[in-house]
Image (tube, rainbow, N blue to C red):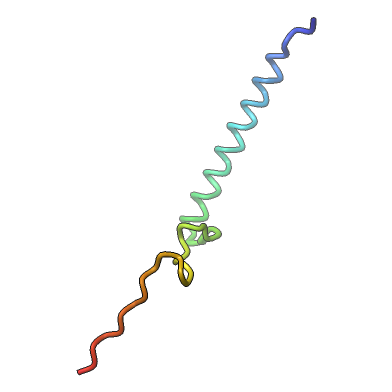
Length: 61
């Protein structure tokens, strides 16, 4: 039976951690520079008929 390669698992875990840290730093730098990341579903207003109430027109004097 083969023995587990713990060194490989550890290296993969370290690489994933490093990648995640770099992504966070890059996102932080983008926010600081004023760049807006791609819009997510939460950022977009609802489309017609998706639970949004129609806006009422202001009363005419």
